[in-house]
Length: 342
Image (tube, rainbow, N blue to C red):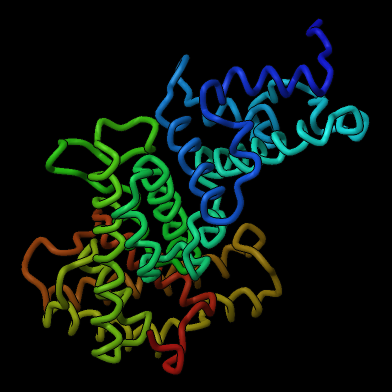
């Protein structure tokens, strides 16, 4: 059985393990920007310190909260998180605990890639993890706390992937999920498992995020409706650097077909037979739904023959699957109206 420690003993153990020679006791009186700077310096140091396959930042998080994420909390119960334990601490010890918890909180969010308040953490104006937050981007590319920036960039990437996945913008989602660095000859993986230096890592992710943002802005200037832009990119199979005229014509033809012939059709079939799901549909209803999708597949083949070079959107390609998935969503009524333009 693990020995039960008092709150004071637990606090002393954490100080020795994570803040030895870090000036923690002197830093307790810091406020505002200087306190934030101290915390960032400690988090950056702990992110770089790896032991037994894990960063010390994660181990500090484990002392307080990480059990919620499937990792075993180091001390359970933690006497520093019980009312009984806190009552035994002196005012000076409570000051040190507050500073430790602030540091551990940012360690927790960064190492688990949680969305966090960048405004509070970095002292910038807007709490926004999007690449359009120019002040955040400037901070990430100029800060001396490069490993904090590295983990933040990865969190931004995950956040954007979630947004694009929710919006079914699959080419953008995949663009970010499989970023490849030709300079380092590797896919860009988690920041604690990559050979890419921190500064370069940040630049690579920000570049990928900017590529999508620029592409969407071009679409806005062209007044493209969201589903039309998505169809263009699904045909490409990626986020292109420009809009291709032939691909845009193909996308427009598919857009018109889906708008006229597919929008809501699968929902209508479900309602006709009074069943809420595919599994419950009778065979006749399933055949009707399959026919809708087969007709769209034929339309895709017709469009590619008319507008695209040989080899584009072959039947077994990722691009073809993108289009079929888009058509199925349209069939169930998920279709962005013209007044929802980018």
